[in-house]
Image (cartoon, rainbow, N blue to C red; front, side):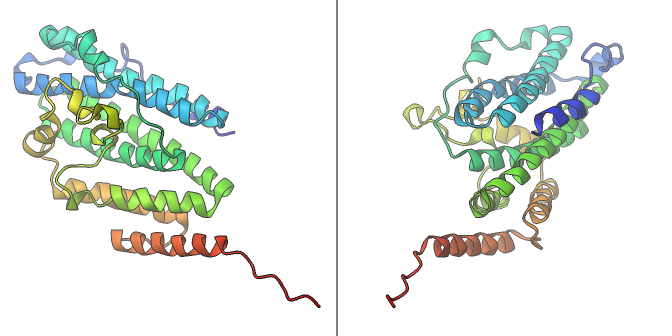
Length: 289
């Protein structure tokens, strides 16, 4: 089991919201209303770990090890929402999300293949790590800068934990796991070719609720995410390249392949498809003696 070891590792580096956040260093002159509004939106977005956890537990009922790890992931992700709300409670109380606004992003996700979902969230953690690092650079108020740095470090550790489960999955499922990871990897590493950044918060997950079946669409301002990325923190091509490079680097190590580009990953994905198809072809019977 991976859970006991991951519990010890993450427990050892867990930060304390009261002791490790320098609340007394707050500088009111360096926080704008615009910046505070983005903190509210991220607090609500982080609250969506709740429905994501419900999805993980439902779709991984046969995997008690991974389900137990969800207790760590869920705790730390909800803590992200909580620390952002605590920041607002102290310094911009009018912007603290209401319970109704938080509950709005809790809705049922349709069932999805567990391996593809695992890879999707692994890529999501890498992307969030970079988004929060960029956000820390953009902010000018010292306390929120440190909070975003803490969050980004947590997301990197979560990505590392997901990678452990991905490695385990390859040991258990072989080609099927590799194919699932390569398929989603091509999608998530191709964000530069799409009109918006690809992340679990803006992917459609419930057809019956369309078009309000993404986390982003259920925020008080559904257009906020793109504005935050493109206009405010300016998550540009340089940052996006870092995300793609990390996804490809980790996949290359995981799959034991020299993957440097999306094209190489896509070629490998197709080769995996051919191998899986060949493995399903029945072996001809030998002629009777």
